[in-house]
Length: 114
Image 1: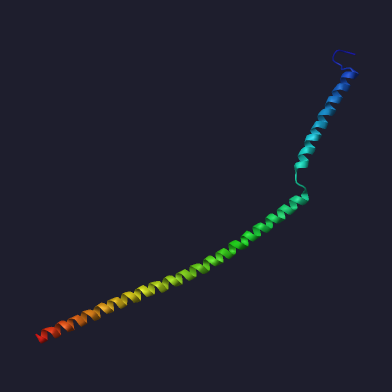
Image 2 (image 1 turned 60 degrees about the vertical axis):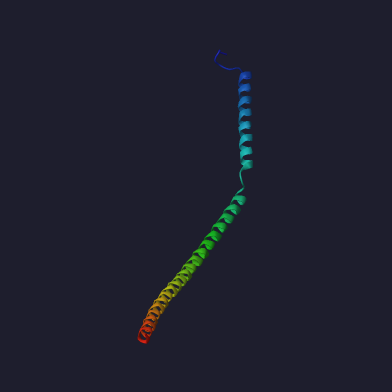
């Protein structure tokens, strides 16, 4: 044998080292696979997530409908409030005009009596 050609013992040691390395890699891979979720678990998780998203969408739709109804109610109440303010202003102006008229009549009566 030449100096470059490994002996049978050296080849055997290299094969054993490579075998150990492959086994080590296999154990590491198995450890990682053991930590991975099963397809059944993943399917159940995705189904639950889809159901949760659907429930949130439904809640959002209900909230939007409630908000729209609330806006309509607030606008109605605001219109009623504005009408009450306008009616109150009209009443106050009418009362002032009537009071002014009454005051003029009283002053005229007092002048005519004096």
